[in-house]
Amino acid sequence: MQAIGIDIGGTKVAGALVDEFGTIVRSERVPTPTDTAALEDAVVDMIRVLADGEQVAAAGVAAAGFIDAAQSTVYYAPNINWRNEPLREKLEARLDLPVFIENDANAAGWAEFRYGAGRLYSDMVTLTIGTGVGGAIVVGDRLLRGGFGAGAEIGHMRVVPDGLPCGCGARGCIEQYGSGRALLRFANELATAGGIGQTLADVRDRNNGLTGELLSELITAEDPGAHAALRTLGHWLGQAAASLSAVLDPQVFVFGGGVAAAGDVLLDPIRSAYFDHLPARGYHPAPDFLIAELVNDAGVVGAADLARISATGA
Image (cartoon, rainbow, N blue to C red):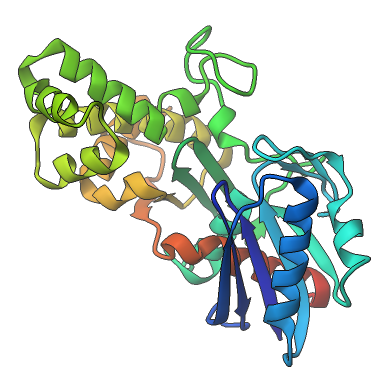
């Protein structure tokens, strides 16, 4: 019951052979080609290498973008030149395996639900805090894809009417207020203002700018300015979580991505803002707030598991 999971990222294509318990048996990694034909070749080659000499039920390929409900066509990929791309058909024509295409955030969230922080729950929302904000929703033990397959785009839920412009074409999306890029923006604003942000300003001047890595170091060192920026981020994420609770009523929110390494320093302001904005506060059962456990392996594990379930029904 092994399956292959492929996770196409902006800088690398990661792949793994995964068993039915979510354990990685073997793995591969190559830089992401910029040319779409070369990218397709890289995915095919990786699947062949991972499948060599193994009994494999299916392969799952995860990528950022809108995927149709049949797990077949990429409607739109923001970082790859795929528009209504029949990717499943193309890959299956070159491979002796059933192939299923999945949104990368859905794959990572499913892995957390099955084998990570969400494994004890039936209803879960995952938010992945990276360059943008990814999301996955599980309702009644089933991944929510939506009627057209393009659901759970939590990063593009609007939290500020006529707010900051977003790459999706709308304004005020949570991605502009709850992402890693937003965290850097908050930190730079504090650095420019001085006061609590003076250390941020000093680090920025010494390094010709702030980076996620520098900010992470300052958060770990408990710098007041860095923690203030993180609290602002948590405030927006908590508001978004409260709105999601009004609709989905999840038992748990799981937060992943590089920023989530801050642990309770991030979760505490999220919880506070959540309860400040929760409808019927005091009468609505409180969900749990957890940090994702699978980290960099979530995409390949989730893609493999979803492909195995789609191919075998188990």
